[in-house]
Amino acid sequence: MAFQQQSSNTSPPPLLHPVPTHPMYIPEPPPTPGSPHGYQRYVGTSSPPLQQSHTQGYPNQDVPIYTRQLPQNQYGQPPPVHHSTHGYQQHVPDFSAWGIDGATTQLGMQLGQSAVQAGQNYVQQNLGWLIPVSLLRHHFNVSNSYVIHKLRLLIFPWRHKPWSRKIKRLENGTNEWQPPREDINSPDLYIPAMALVTYVLFVALLRGLQDRFHPEVLGTAASKALAVSMVDFLFVKTGCYILNIQGSGQVLDLIAYGGYKFVGVIPTLTAGLFGFGTTLYALIFLYFFFANAFFLLRSLRSVVLPDNAQANVGTVNQAQRSRRITFLFFIAMTQVMYMWILARV
Image (cartoon, rainbow, N blue to C red):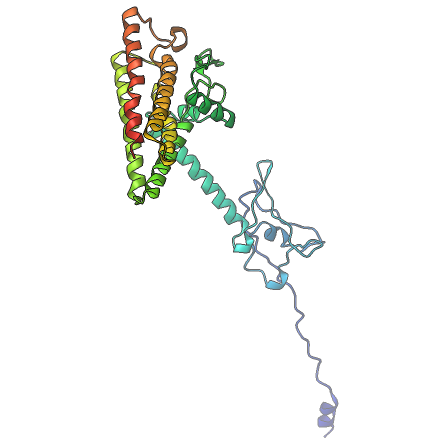
């Protein structure tokens, strides 16, 4: 009885509940591609230990949710992301609103730049033998002032002086032509390209006003314009080959000079749009034909009769000079046929 009474008066030992603790091991996030030294853990006491990983855009999936905290500014918003690459600050747009992290954005930008560079290298390696990119860039190097003065020269070429092209001496001692931006007499491809597009659209407008428009009009007008330009170019190029006329950048120069005829065709089509009489229409057409022919006579002289010291060509005797001048006049006179074909809509 005494034993039973003593056991009943003894209280049971107190229950010990487990105290919650943070995980002792936190896996390191992957290294940051933009940092040359990889990921460096933040050891400060004022911020959570995972602040660095979230600012770099690499959240750790193994860490509990209550341990992940993003640093906030005084307005309660996370600071912008800035990546440092090779000593300079590269601004990366914040695409987090679309669910794209900083690493994906940077990877996409790098892939885009690589694709553009690969395309430029492919064009340079595979098509550079046909038309060098440097010459193409030279002929599109224009300014607003050049375009305005060039159009005025094409419409009123009668009193323009001088017609000789300017030369620029390079550091290696060689000479090259000044770009169109710096020389009004230099041929360009910007005005011929824009004039050709304007011609195609103007033909479509005229057909629409005459209730004859259909989608094939754009293709037909473009094909006719390109065919006329190709025939003109092949004729001039064949004559230059037969007369042994050589020069650097001659192909693009001939294409540019042949494309200036569209500048005179467009006002002729405008005269037909406003319903001018046959006599006035013919006078406008003849004026722009003679303006284009006079312009070609003076401008193509640098191609047909290049300066020996500038173009590094051989001496031209009197017989060759006479044949080249005749060929130059023949080029100018054939423009009436090309412009008449283009003006017939």
